[in-house]
Image: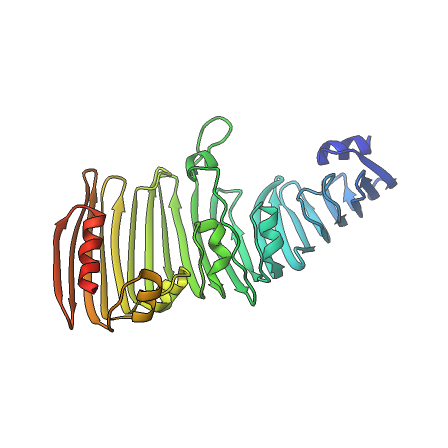
Length: 374
């Protein structure tokens, strides 16, 4: 009967090698057909319906009772009852360690407190079916609570250490878009009310570890601070980063779980570091700023470069433009609506001045800008 119950719980055939049960104690050792082993012993009270136990799960083989396609080992202790069950333990996984403290209320997740130490990033991405070639290690803490009340708050801190990263081919995502409504809809097609207030602090030694998720090659270090807050009626994501020595903020409003507006404000970015961040050779130096507001029907974007200098060697080798060093300031504005894109631009250098007024094609704007550089 115990083997049948375990086989049903793990959705795989389970065999019991040791089993003992008394009115207040138990001991069990079981394994699946792949060599994964579960052992546990402890005590319980039929009067108070409380339980305490130690457990150990060794899953060094895929399939069977192993819920993931990666080897791991975990052990710990649990205590409590139906109203609250406390689980504390540690896990060896992805060549690192995770200390965890989890609370279940009526067997539903209530709180999760995790401490990550030297988690290898490469096998983690392989588990998600993404290519990766890096020695990056992840450390941090995850402290979230309120799942059972659907009022989730907490803090996530992550840091990465990277000494080697070789870019890998970026895979095309089969999913055309990320749909929050589908993710949060229950089996009856309903979205239950919820509240969320979660902050994220991340420090990346090499932004290239994110290339599979953003769809672009990246490089360079940066810090990210973000907050997701709101409810099912209005969610807001507010983020800040110092990438490329900038002061950049991003705000996304998501009413009714449908992204509606995006606002970003980039200040004082180092242009050479900005190009390097996107793994591109920098044809110019200087400081860059940008401000953009977008919604589902229209948008506005302004980009300004001050104290700019062209880099003749890069312009010649990468863009086949021959010219001396030019000092310049430039401003480009774009209004986007259902009828197209309208540009305004000014370019002032120690050699020439140029103004573009209401140009309606990308090609025309770029031709006029390149002519000013010759």
